[in-house]
Length: 95
Image (spheres, rainbow, N blue to C red):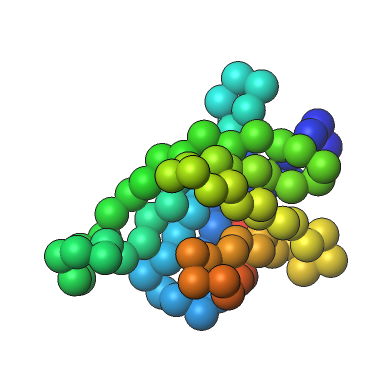
């Protein structure tokens, strides 16, 4: 696939029913729509749209002064997204 095409589509967190991600092509780059629980107010689901660049086989997002690299695992067709807390959330493709 053309650089980054493996990331395109809708994704559902394996462990968190209220977390989803959508990756869309945006010109030469990508947009990541992160759909997850808001920090405040609790119970609210919010969508954050972040620009992403395909680099070295990963999607790279720069926001709020930090950068985050999202990996893709071909064998399992999953996406690995790091969290602010230092853990990783695994997302499965929504068919």
